[in-house]
Length: 230
Length: 251
Image (cartoon, rainbow over all chains, first blue to last red; front, side, top):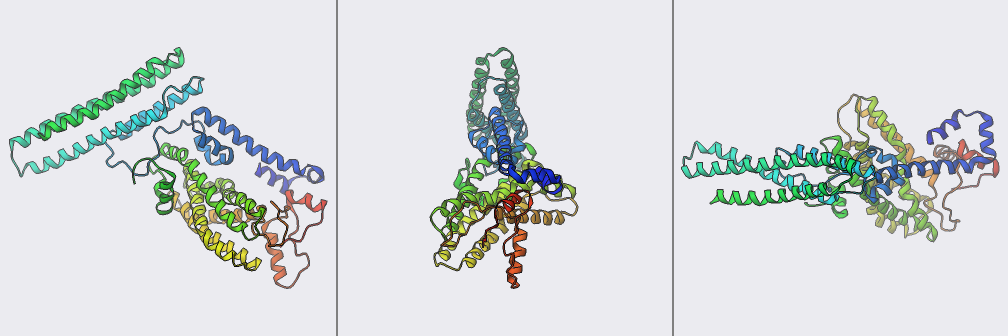
């Protein structure tokens, strides 16, 4: 719009300018303003359909050029944090990718006319719990590396046994995490089935099962680590 | 600092480590940040700039409080909204591709930081304006404040953009020039901000050409030539005013 106005101003034919000068100028202002607000309203509506919150959609009304990067994108699954994760685990990127795929799938179901199946806060909690479990695995890996380096200095059968139990607990936690990630992908597939069949109950049950599994993973880790300490 | 970001936490990070607000890993993370931060950063911008506007409006009082508080956020946001594609093109010409989300987020952070700093300057400017300085001195004080807070804002924007590319300083300089010109012209279109104590309060003055013709008129006046003191109405938006009514003498 602005470019059009400047182009007309600089290169427009004199009769056109004269016509504008004689009585159409207020309508030019109105056209520019309405065009800007109309584009803002269209983008706000689109972002709303994608599942973005009221803050983003109302921001798009006034400042839509800044939010063009969000067009066609689902809202983020995690809340904003300024502190980086203390120790990103070995599966951090996979967890993020799974959660992103899931939230995009949810946005597609909303866009297809369905209601919001899963609360964004529930997804954020699940992602947080998974990252915590992954962070614990990273800490255990670090601990195992440090202990391996010191084993040459101290030879003790009880230390060897503790290391073996720690390694076993780590493998168990990792296997559980892998199972939950696979479950997230299955959930993504079930969202597609929901789009076809419209049955939301299996999706909710599957998510509840995954949440319970992640919670159990945290408890299991603490129990197994306590056994290692003893 | 831990847990979810509140607006107060965001303000602290914005002033101390604005680069922490930018995700550095991938484009998807940048889009997430943009979606999460935009409402808060816009809110901070509007609040900070409105406080600065209230202070400017206090020189005249009455409705000018409200008018200046409404127009000042627009003064900060308009140059960014209009100039962002040009900035991206400048950096693209210097072989530095910048994702739109990152550029928008960097610009929002810069504007919000400028607005917060402007609000922080408010009490000092208010104290000065309460001494009833001369009209021109009041304008100079406002301009000095804007330059003082705009510098860190522009620096934040340039630092937030990725490094690399060829002739990056050239792109940075061109971006600064474009933003400076847009800020000056936006201020000209949205004036008056500072109104003489006995002058009539208007929300917007009639469109009169551009800020550069005004500067030329001021230069002529400074040389003792007071003929044609006013900026001449011109351009598509200013032409009709020229035909319809004679230009008013505006300071």
